[in-house]
Amino acid sequence: MPPKILSSAAARHLSSRCRLTIQDKPLCFQFGSRRNISHEEKPLPTADRPGPGPNEQQLPHVSEEAATMSKITGDEAPDLGKGTPVQEILKRDEKGQEKAPEVLKSSVQTNAPKGARSFSTNAGRELEEAIIPIPGQDVEGTGHKFGMPALPLHERLHLKHREDPVIHQVTQLLIKDGKKSRAQQNVARILNHLRTMRPPVINPERPLMPNAPPASHLPLNPITYLTLAIDSVAPLIKIKGYRGLAGGGQALQIPIPMAVKQRRRTALKWILDTAEKKPFKGSGKGGFAQRIAEELVAIVEGRSGVWEKRGSIHKLGVGARSNLIRLAARKR
Image (cartoon, rainbow, N blue to C red):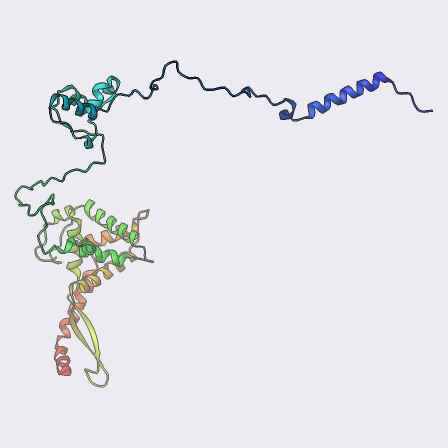
């Protein structure tokens, strides 16, 4: 005989199951879609009386209004292509006058003459180029604001030669791994050290270049300071060996004069070699530049070992100058 099922228990079970299924539904499915707008299409509201809208009754432009008034009064009309003066706009805007610059406030308060347009809202209009003559110089031709430079131009005005030749040569020698910007930074540090150091004490036994400025003036111009130190120790000659001049394949040493760039290059190599061997007592990235600057000061004061290198080459040149006769005879 099958078991008896109570109707009250079954109804309670079904009601609880239905309640659970409703709660398990997502929130978006529990509520039906509602539409607040009616489906009936209604015509748009129309005005009682026909006429322009609220944005269709605008005041005319200030320049257009001034042009209309000038036609009535018979005065000269303003140029509509130049824009609207800011002063005329500020006269109609009291709140804008409070926040306007002092220059505009003073111009608004004063009664400017008609047609004066010192400030304009039209930034795209073309300005007429005025020729402003320079005192003491005659401007030739038309369309030039300043006079044309005199020809031929100075060599320092060329883009590739705008730097001092000594600065350019030092920068080229300091380049490592193709990093020119780092070499330029080192040159700038060298010049800064020369500018901030104390004036050097010149040794009379180590004469510098003729017509050199006083020692107290050197830190004022670090480029002159650098050039003077390099040119003072730059050798005038170099020693080159020629084989076969002495007979039997023996080489003879011949002194050969050098150009200015060659002399400076040799002196810079000596200075850099000496600076690399010096110990650095400080810290930071500018250590090498500081050592080079200290070596340059030592050269001017006559304390550097570069003077001995220059003196030894000159002694060899004086001793080997007699070999020039054999070199001239061989070329004949």
